[in-house]
Length: 95
Image (cartoon, rainbow, N blue to C red; front, side, top):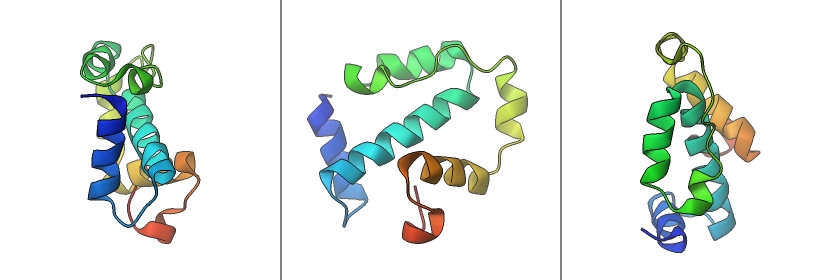
């Protein structure tokens, strides 16, 4: 999948948002996910993404991904994503 196609898909699924908002949402979600999974899993995820998005992932963290991921609630994950994209969870209700 190409970058523009990926972002277009995000935009389509999160309507009504702009292309720029879709890009911020995708980057914030994927980078947050890559921070709580193992480096190998992050590399695997990145291998399935357009290069522009794969470059935004964290490949060296965390030391114990299972512990971090298990201690992170969906609400906490959404708050981190919202902070990264510059929108509070209450502003849209979802990352």
